[in-house]
Image (cartoon, rainbow, N blue to C red):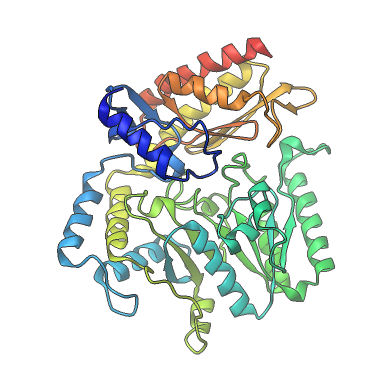
Amino acid sequence: MNEKALEIKKNHTTYNLQSWSKQKGLNPIPIARAEGIYMWDYDDKRYTDMSSQLVNLNVGHGNRQIIDAIKEQAEKYCYISPAYGSDVRGELAKMIIERMPDNMGKVFFTNGGADANENAVKIARMYTGRQKVFSRYRSYHGSTYGAGNLTGEPRRYPLEPGAPGFVKFFDPYVYREKLSFNSEEEASEYYVDKLREQIIYEGASSVAAIVMETITGSNGVIIPPKGYLKGVRKICDEFGIMMVCDEVMAGFGRTGKMFAFENFDVKPDIVSFAKGVTCGYVQLGGVCVSKKIAEYFDDHLLSCGLTYSGHPLACAAGVACLKYYDDAKILDNVKKSGAALGKELEALKEKYEIVGDVRYIGLFSAIELVKDRKTKAPLVEYGKDPEGVMKSIIGKLAEKGFMTYSHENMILICPPLIITEKQIKEEMAKVDEVIAEVNKAY
């Protein structure tokens, strides 16, 4: 490793607190450059970004259209307060609303996904005058205080005892359900009925919102069964509850549709977004609200505000990013490459007993590893991997230049949306090699 790389590593481990990590023994890879779906270290070793970093770099590294837009905006002005008119802020809001269902009205911009979800909850509470908010156990909505209380998985624990009014319910995780269902629709009816019963017992008139990742992301790419989201929509309509879809990870083309909820023929009341709106070139998030909600705030104070709401550099990046999605026909590519990825995943499931389930939609996928297919016993349980099995698997993939991450007993595979069918086959061959090795061990 050359001197520059050693200096980067030393500074990183000496002065940075790295997220979601024990700080002792960290070994970051210093990255010298990146282009498309690839990154290179200072020894010129190439790595393939098969998780789109944190499932946000949808258009890959080095997109000139976005970079040039940021430069152009920087020459005009880098920052202007949210109270001033900004051409790129208004243009981006318009472009987003035009891509939303016809019931959506306006956008409130935030800095990222966590504060998008925080403000989505605030808006739902202000609009309905109610306090309780439902969200799912296998969810991640961010790690700030409000978004962390909204989160259902164990990353919420450091925030407990949490804020009052946050109620959890279970995901439609059909693969791990003890009951057997004859169809997806039957499964949906079961889960929706349970949710409706819980809402009644919590006091339906006190519930402001049901917040869901449209497709559960890092907690397993859990795709809702047919009819589930329509069933939730029906509950919301029945009791005057706001349906909030968290599209932070699944939005902006990841599933082959611009937004994941389009796959299920529903119209949310509120949509939170981030990640793919600028693909990480400049941080940005936001909340889309329905026309009815937008009209409510014509005469009621919108008690939301952020210094960097609609930051001009971020909005310029967002405008360029959305134009690139259209110009490059990204949705078409996701459908083609996503079909290729699905075939590769199904082949792994057919080939190896350790692969309990594969779930995928577009370029959003997870491989669930098990000790036993019949019992579905997970290879490791969350927080209980003393031998570092999953870390070892991710490490073996990294040695082959396949960069991604794991969660619980699952490997996430969510490459940039520009990936080709040929690149999918090349990279999934590496996964095959690693799983073959692990399969022998178990």
